[in-house]
Amino acid sequence: MKLRVDRDAFAEAVAWTARALPSRPAVPVLAGMRLEVPQGGSTMGLSGFDYEVSTRASVEVLVEEAGAVLVPGRLLAEIVRTLPEGSVHIDTDGTRVRISGGAARFTLITMPLEDYPTLPGMPDRIGSVPADTFVEAVRQVTPAASRDDTLPMLTGAYLDFTADTLSLVATDRYRIAVRELWWKPDDPGIDVSALVPARTLHDMVRGVIGGSNVDVALSTGPGSGGLAPGEGTIGFENGVRSSTTRLIDSDFVKYAAWFPAEFAARAEVAVAPLMEAVKRVALVADRHTPLRLAFSEGEVSLEAGSGEDAQAVEAIAVDYRGDPLRVAFRPDYLMDGLTAISTDIAHLNFTEPTKPAVFTDVPSKEGEAPSFRYLVQPLRVS
Image 1 (cartoon, one colour):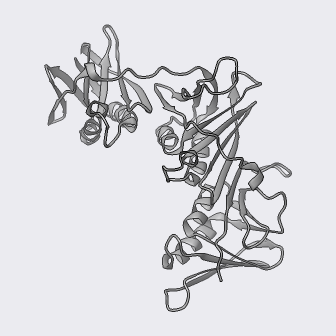
Image 2 (cartoon, one colour):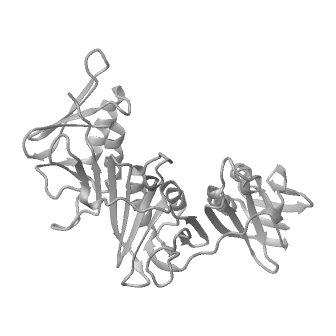
Image 3 (tube, rainbow, N blue to C red):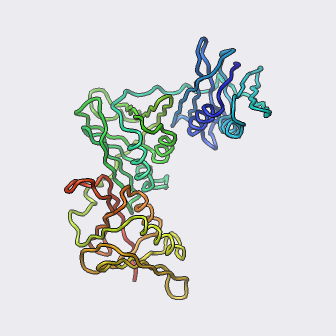
């Protein structure tokens, strides 16, 4: 292999592909990134695979000699990222590959290409979704997924494809984030769902090209409309980049019943000032220390700390309707919910101080349902 490639385009492709590479691979060869230029081709394909997640990208190159090579992927990403602007030259010599850019020269030892596993194919396409909206939805929902790998079901983001509505849901039992958005199905009558590892989904949407579409592909059982047991795979394709991941083989929780049907009180509050106040007051609290909010007509007072501990108090204006209410939340759960609100104003809906509250965005049209909902369980305080 011998070629020349633009540094910026190559760095982006390598960074994208490296996201599938494990930091501690079970098999050393899985730390490798495959670079391949076919005979007569003008693009180089990059791929990574850890038996769960696969990533592929391609980049335009000036080819002198075609070929394929397997190199340490994360090291390659670090090297290319630090090279000066301009062209990057790559050529192989036996078990070595030389990478040069500007005055910098690197030589890497290749990995055995014959030991590298075959990447899975892309499942059948089921539709497409606007890239910017999808990225926002993933950003809003995935923080609510659990990090506890002993409960795999809760580490996933649930994607429900029903007609032209795509719902993304995640929960760790103490909060639930739900985002609904429009998408374009290939089959208008589609009704399937998938449970995708949340961390993987979050990584997949990083680097998505704005203003474009993301094609969604999903493996389904023949004629059943459901996923093939043990073989569920979802894929996303955006321009010259694509990725697949195995699905979590588990049923998701029946989350809809957790949302209250009606509320006793609502606060309409500007998101940015409330977030700034939460950040300041939370300085005296750790993640599990309650941040207390006292709502009354025209105002919410935020408090943290008590007794001989450090304390903080701040009040901001809100439009509050209902009886005076005192409620407490984990500061990080409160911030995650507010950060996910995409509108300047948020609705904070309450039933009782010890029962779940629901934060929502404000619909653009009167009478419409909010596109994002965040249910969070308050903390009990004496």
